Length: 417
Ligand SMILES: *Cc1c(COP(=O)(O)O)cnc(C)c1O
Image 1: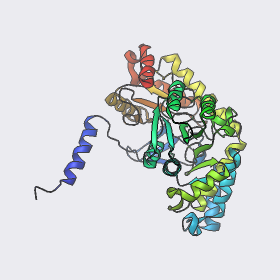
Image 2 (image 1 turned 45 degrees about the vertical axis):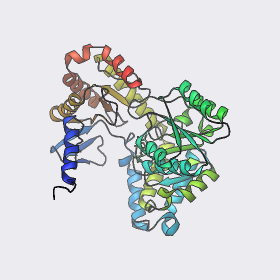
Image 3 (image 1 turned 30 degrees about the vertical axis):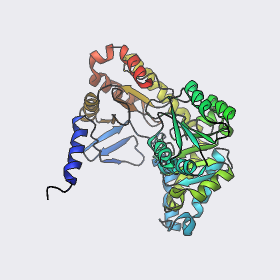
Image 4 (image 1 turned 30 degrees about the horizontal axis):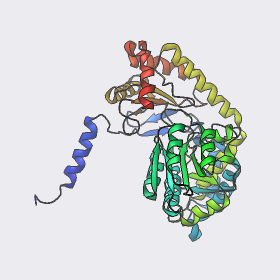
């Protein structure tokens, strides 16, 4: 027997290693109360808490119109799609949702996937494997779902330094003339909160005949006059060939999409395995997504309130010296810790002593040495909650950490490295 592979032994040892490094993930069992977000019940620790790290950035997951749309659709149509898009799964709410997303991004067409992850990995994989001799230029900080798509596409890839136009151009000049090129990047980066130079990247793409692929997952719903994202805010939607987004964050439900030209959508629809070979999004979910996108488009005051709260909270942090990383240009507020064990301890203390939930962010989500808390205020966080949060942070960070202004600089230089 001893010459056989010890499966459990291998699994246990791998997990042990994670634990020793302080990177083992533990999930908190939460029950949000409809209408009371950001309050929730924590079943793991048996208490009511305030959530400060959720990606339901606008609280749309509990919006009464969205909830009603889902219930109503379930009553009328039922809960299942019943098949893939090709085999009787293309349900009417889903078709209307694709039209809504097309119009949100002022594109010709849109495709909905079961998640943003699947949208990225399927689209990039399909292009990588089908466009003859494609080169993908990918920002080094791109999300795991894009990395997976690029990898599975098996085409040539070049990684450019984060938001580094010079490096991007250098890599573009290396590509033989006439080859197809795709530049894949994000608008708001989810861990540093920084925003990419979309216009400059589009200029380079034009100059070198490249396609642009923009992940707006952390921006849709939140930026632009109708919540179309950063490209919308900057009037650049037309210049992006493929805009990718999610309905799971700013729109508060679930599901991902791409918005693009008619012919590109037809191509991905026809050749993308993750689109064709997976059961279509179910009607109540599509109805909820549709209600949410419509609501968010029409309610600019939600966005205004979000950004007011973000500014207020950033100012409150600055006043007491909480080390907010200077990278942030968005609603994502990363607070630097720089040590995995300390980061976990701080997060645990916030929960244990203050009933505040901020998940610690450790490697491999962020580079080692840049461990942080990632705080995301919403329009529903009250001023009182913010004061509680600041008081708690001041306590758990401790005096010596708050005094040291260097910490912030250090965090940014590590993040940029
Ligand atoms: C969360 C995320 C995704 C995946 O979207 P889901 O809808 O959650 O699958 C894609 N890109 C980025 C940058 C993300 O943060």
